[in-house]
Length: 241
Image (cartoon, rainbow, N blue to C red; front, side):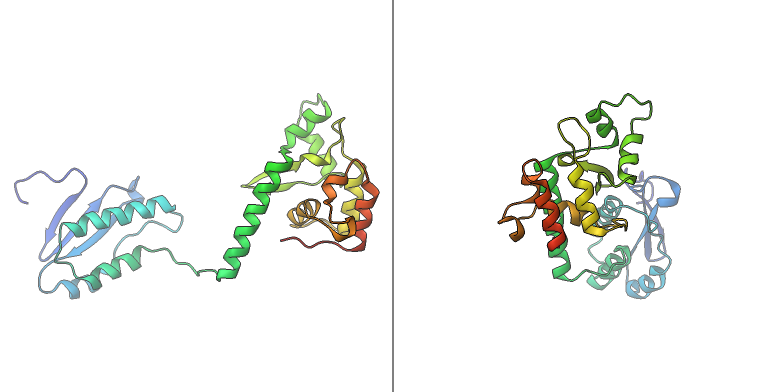
């Protein structure tokens, strides 16, 4: 390639029998990836010697960055068919993130959890902290303070979804204030202890049919028979997901 301009998407420098490709797919100096493509009779030996020195994206690189790296690798290898499969496998292994695959039953349970949570929010609706103030008609300058106070007083609870805190809408009455039954159910559920990561378990309990309620859901009895809901929680908590 002497005398020719470097390809737009790569820079090629040949040293002996090894070609080093610098690919600017990674943004920033620190994230530049050098992929090694061996050529010639001593390809395997030189590949083995150089693999340990290939610069990779740091552990914080996101999935798209790694996909771009693999795409770049494929382009490089397509131009040098002489690279053997063992070399390709070593490069792929080097660029792959370290992970321990979860057991299938854990993946299945996680998928069910995710589906149940999404369905719950879609059916019942929810508001963020500022929305709690809006429902109650609060005019406080800090529109998140009311939700925080009610949550600390254990009058309402929140769930986290995609890193955002939400307050299920069924907890609030027509006046925008917490229904008294919510605090009673929370007391029956965990006593004086904090929910400590059990918020979704409590939320999904409200959405699950119970034998103590003649196969009805607690959420459907909030207005008509709230004390029966408390009794159902006291008699036997439904462990959901």
